[in-house]
Length: 292
Image 1 (cartoon, helix red, strand yellow):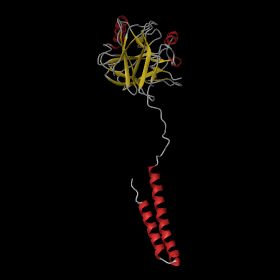
Image 2 (cartoon, helix red, strand yellow):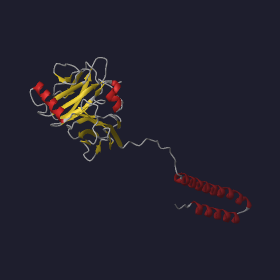
Image 3 (cartoon, helix red, strand yellow):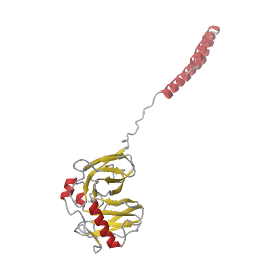
Image 4 (cartoon, one colour):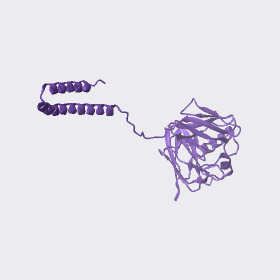
């Protein structure tokens, strides 16, 4: 930046000296005051300009607020095991319906872990030899949803022989194929003490359920069938048994929310995505577990 204040100050000084030389002592005295005032005023003006410029060019520092960076990934961990047994399934493939590029293979103890994008939804399913490929409930991977670190997302899947037997049993209750017109949704009204358990702790803790709870589905397009304490679907069972199991056959494709009610208790909700021919098993320790 160029400044013109310095040349103006020098010119004023020259004019003042010339006036002093041409005038008498008395005149010089009065003129000096006038000229000096002009010089001082010009110098003062220049100083103000220089100070203003320096201030405007000076770097400013502000304390920017510090915020934690948003999480970009989420993790889901759990164990695959055979329905109604403590037996883990090794070598199974765990996939995610919303992210077909992702998969994990279960270890010798049936465990698996998946890394997924934070903020997404995730419906897991299993591919295992001699087992029916069930799906999990649909999770929302946010802090305000189901969380970013999900443990105990177990996949309880029946052997093909047991699956065919259960399908025939439910069909006998309803008078038609339980998959006709849609899917089957299964969950467990679970004991709050299961929350946070490892798989080994979960398997040793049984029965898993809360008896006497009523389960509803929204939209209300299917009727629940509760499992009795022998872990069998039973039309005579009007509320959950100590097993806690409940299923909804013939659910049309769509998005659903399951809720449980019992006096004096609160339960987690379950979100399920139904497609034709799918079995959605919202398995404990997740599912409709009681809140601690």
